[in-house]
Length: 112
Image (tube, rainbow, N blue to C red; front, side, top):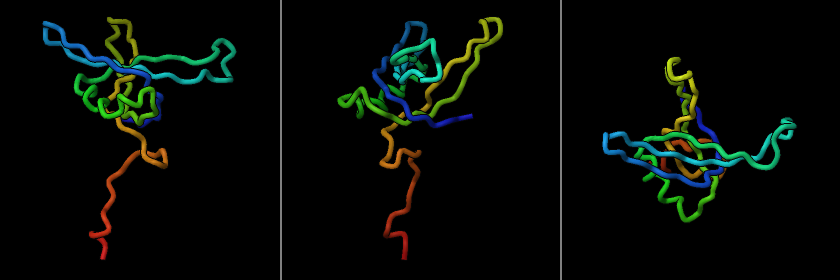
């Protein structure tokens, strides 16, 4: 299931190994929840992403850190690997003015 979240992206990196494995990592920051008495200040998280996502972030690079809309999905590794769940980013873009997911809209020329 794909979800869209608003995140404060503070950086990104990508990698390509000799064995053909490629990927990217997106680093986000969020304020600690006031309800959690064991955390103060800000929390930093790293999300996995496909190698190509780095190119989508280039347009926003001069403005980083910045808010972005991220389409994410939760991925769980095999139980033999400990069953770790990671957040995997599949798309990234600047949020629109309303802060809601961007959608295709028809132009005025389409309406008569």
